[in-house]
Structures are given as structure tokens and as C-alpha cells.
Image (cartoon, rainbow, N blue to C red; front, side, top):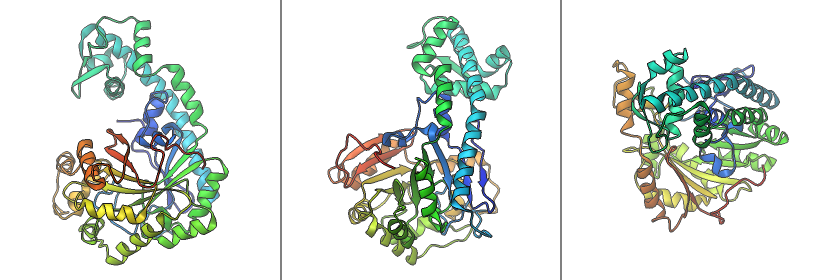
Length: 423
């Protein structure tokens, strides 16, 4: 389990904002800045990205949501000052980075030890490495995960690994093992340098929970980040078009605005944004408000993205409908991203009414069943082809297999350069 995967920090006096280090933030720190999420295509380093939300409450109950629709707060006693939220988010991020350095150095040393042992034994267990190094099985599993992601070992099962003899075909000395890690994983110097850079965050994603635009001072929050030289990605469900217009009029639009479109038509939208349990229905009113947001999207003087979170058997339907919405919205980009089994996302089966809420079901079994709704990268690419008519209407810009994500251009012209030039 990653170091900070369960860490979540409520921000401010009223706790409507919060912070959560993401998987790729940690991956980037662990690998000395070598691994990043899909946002790296925009020029964003994951180690310098703050994952946050300005408002944990939400007016929708999307069945695919990875946050807790079941226990999400609806009302807060007040709203914190934007400056307070910014300062606490940056302070929290820095404290995580400081804590991470020691853990990442230890992880590197365990990986080095494991690589030397497996180069000799060819096949080795987690327990053997843990006993040899004098550490826990969980820490060894973490190190093996990095060796696996680097292609240096093959996984036999969760407790047993085999050396990849295409890369390592002899017993390695300490220096030789360090050279292999430097080529395929990272170095201690890179880890230390990346942590130094991470102490000065350059980007914030206002996205991971709730509906950020419900926070009435979202424009001031974006402005406070911009004042500090920090770029902003704001993700909204699009049901507050007046707030987007307000950001425009104030001159406080984010660096890049994402509008999530949960369905290509009203019926699919209603199914995707309504929870059977807990009972929280959506409405035509919200669908119409989303469409109002889409109508102004192409007019905004900021970078814009229409995002589809794609769920098999739920909203991966009617590609022509999505195409029409994208043409109407005319954003810079169209993104299709696969439903991922993380956090509370497996609860989708209960939210859809497929499993009665009072039935006790093993989480492993729940995840197994939910996985059937999670599209592969190949399925996402195929659906993107259907939406874009084989990428003729919306040219493919990039694809990220690990995130099951395809990015297409709608009005963006330079397919070879999508990097952010100004915040």
C-alpha cells in the first residue's frame, strides 16, 4: 500500500475544503520525478501538484464517484477565507513531502537489496527479503512494486517475484545494482532533488471530491493560487453555469476548466447521476443546466476540456450523442477517461440498485464485480474512435494506458504541443 494512500486532511475552520495526496504524486516522489500522471502532457510534474477540493458537498450522486456518496456532508456552518485555504493546502503538501523523503530513501535501499538478492536467486519471496533486510513484508512489497513497474522483476503472485532475465542476467554487485536502478528506476540523488523541488508546488487540481464551484469564493481561491505562481485545474459537473460566468466576469477563470459530462442524453445522464441507495435522484433541471454550461464553454478565454468518465454498461452508449455535445461545447479538448476501481467507486453496484444496501458483501467480491464495469484502455480507445469517427472529427492528441485515458482535440490546433504557457 502506498505511503499516503489513506491520508486525507480537512482544511480550514469549517472543513468544507480538503487535501488528499494522490497516487501519482507519491509515485513521482518515489521515482525521483520519473513517473507522472496524464497531466504531465500539459507540462505538469506530479510531484509539484496539490490534489484538493474547495467544497466536499455535491448536488449529484454519480454512481461512479470514488468518494463517499453515502456519507458526504451536505451543509457546512460557514465558508473559510480563500487565503486561509491556500496557505493550509500548501503547508499540508510541504509536510507530506518532508515526511516522504525518509520513506522514499528507505524504499530505494530496500529495492536495491531486493534486486541484488533476486539477481542471485532468480525467484524470491517477500518474506525472504524482509528477513534478510530486517524490515516488514509490506515495505518489501512496496519496493517490489517499484521494481515491477520498472520492468526489473516479474510478479508470480503477491508474495513471490522472479527476476526479468532480459535485463538482469547475472548476479549483481552493489554498484552494478545501483547502475541498473539508475537506468530503470531512479537514484538517491534524484529522489532528494525531486523532494526539494516538491517543496515549491506549482500546480493545484481542485477536483477530487464534491462540486468545487459550490464554494462561493472559488474565484478568489483561484486568484490566490495564481498570485503565487500556481496553475489551477478546476473540475466541475457543470450544473452551476452562473458560477462559471461569474469567474469569467471577474477574470478568475482557472488555467484549465474541466466540465464532466456523465451521459450523451438525458436518460443516460439521469441514470448515471442518480443514486438508488442512498436515494438521491437527479433531474432534467440539472441536465439543462449542464447544457447551459456547455453552450458557453467554447467562448471562455481559458483552456477548456469536456470530460467523459466512461463506465461500461452504464454510459458508454450513444457515441453520436457525445459527439454532438462536444461540437456544441467546442472546448479545446475532449477527454474520455475510464471508470477506476478506487476509494468508494466499487459502491457503484449498490448505487445502481444492483446489490441491496443491507446485504453484507465482502469488499474483495464487491471490487471483483465492479471491475466488470471498468473499461480497459483498448475499450476506451475504441469508444473514442466511435465518438470522433475514427479521430477524423476530433484528432487524437495522446493516450495514457495506466489512466485509461484518451485526449482528443476539438478546437486546439497544435497537436504536438499542449503544454501550459501561462497560468
